[in-house]
Image (tube, rainbow, N blue to C red; front, side, top):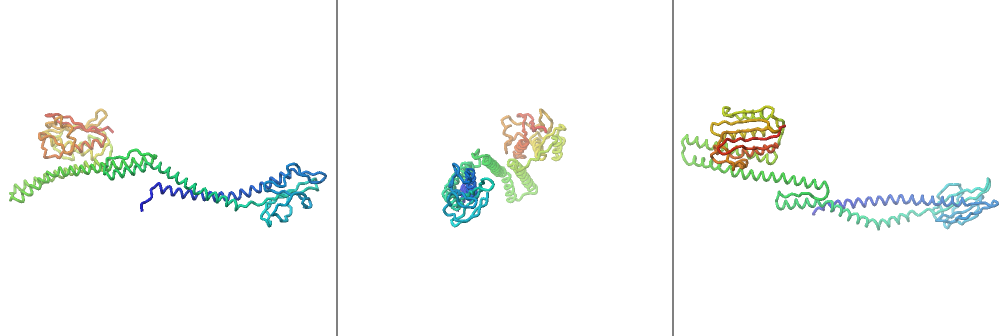
Amino acid sequence: MKPRSIKTRITLWITLLVVVLFSLMLLFAFSMSSSVVQRTARQQLADAVRANAALVSFADGQFAAGEGFAFSRSGVSCLVYSKAEALLAGQLPVGFSASVPFENGTLRTVESSGGDWYLLDLWVADGWENGVWLRGLMEVPDVSATARNLLLAAAVALPLFVLAGALGCYFILRRSLRGLDAVNAAASSIGEGKDLSRRIGPVPGGRELTQLAENFDGLLERLQRSFEAERRFTADASHELRTPVSIIKSACEYAEAFDETDEERRETLGMIHRQADKMAGLIGQLLALTRLDQGTETLRPVPLDLGQLARRTLEDQNYDAARLRLALAEGVTVKGDEALLGRLAANLVDNAFKYGLPGGTVTVEVRAENGEALLTVADEGPGIPAGQQEKIWQRFYQVDAARGDQQEGVGLGLSLVQRIAQLHGGRMTLKSAEGAPSAFTLHLPLA
C-alpha cells in the first residue's frame, strides 16, 4: 500500500484535532448555556417583581397599582396578596397549583403538578402594620430544549466546519510545502539521470526548506567530489601502473624463459625492486592526493616556525648535507598542519635533487616578506621552458627528458605541493627559464 503524502497526513491529523476541539467547545457551550439560561430567568423574575413593587401605592389602606404595573410580562406572572394571604389581584398561571408559604426576598424553586417554577415573594409595607405581598412566578426554562437546539445546530455546522477546515489546511500545506516538492522532484531527477553536478538551488517555503535544499546541495557537492576523486584515482592508477607492471612482467617472463647468470639475475631483481618502489611511491602519492581532494585528511593547523619546520624535515630525510645551502630565518611563524607542510617541503627538495644538475647545490630559504612567509627551494638544473611552467602543476605531467632522470619520478609531487598550499590558504610560484636554475616558492600568510 502506497504511503500517504505528508500533506494528507497532516491534514487528517489537523481535521481530527478540529473535530475534538469542536466537540469540547460544544460540550462547554452546552454546560454554560444551561447555567446561563437558568441564571437569566432568575434575574428576569427578580427584576420584574422589584419593578412592580416600586409601583405599588395605597389609598386609605387599600392597594392601588400605579401606571406601568404589569401582572404578566415576558413569562413572569405577578400576583398581589393581602397580609392575610388572600389574593387581591392577578391570576395564577396555568400549571401552577402549589400552595407555598410566603417568605420575603427569597428566590426559590418549587415543584408543581405542571413542572418546576421559580418563585419570589416581596413584602410591600403600608405603615407599621399594613401592606401587601407581591409574588412573582416564572416557569423554569426547559434546558433539554436548549440542548436539542444546540445539537441540531452542531449537526448542521460540524460537517461544513470540518470540510472547510480540511480544505483550508490542505491548501495552506500545499503552498507551504511547495519547496519540499521541488526538493523531491530535483532529487528524483538527479537520481534517475545520475547527474551529481545538478543542484536544487533556492526553493520556496521558508527558512527550513531553504536550509534543507542547501544541505542537500552540500551533500551532492561532497558526493560529486568523492566520485570524481575515486574516478580520477582509478584512471590515474590504471594508467600509471601499467608501465611498471609490464616491466615487472617482462622481467619475470625473461627470467623464466632463459637460464640467467647470477649477474643477470641480480640485475633482473634490481629492476623489479625499482619498479615496485616506483609503484609504491605512485600509490602513496595518489592516495594522499585523493584524501586531500575528498577532504578526508583532516587539517590540524597549529602555530609553526617555518624555518624550524624546514630544518627538521631536511634532517629527517637524510639528504647530502654537502649539497645543501640553507638560509632559514627564525621567527617566521605560520599556522598550518605540520605533517602536510613537512611533506610539501620534502617534495620540493626531492624535486630539486632529482631534476637539478648531478652533484649540484640545492638552496632552501625561509624568510618573511610583504606580510607573507616564504619557503623557497632552488636548484641548479637546466630550467623549465616558459610554455611548460603552467603545466607542471598538473598530475603526471613531466618536463622533457633534458631535465634530470625522468625514470625517478611519477609527476605527482608538484600536484601534491600545490594542493597542500591551497588548503593552507597559500599559493605556489615558480621562477625559472630554459637554461637557468628553477626556484619554487611557497607563499603563506604570517600567523
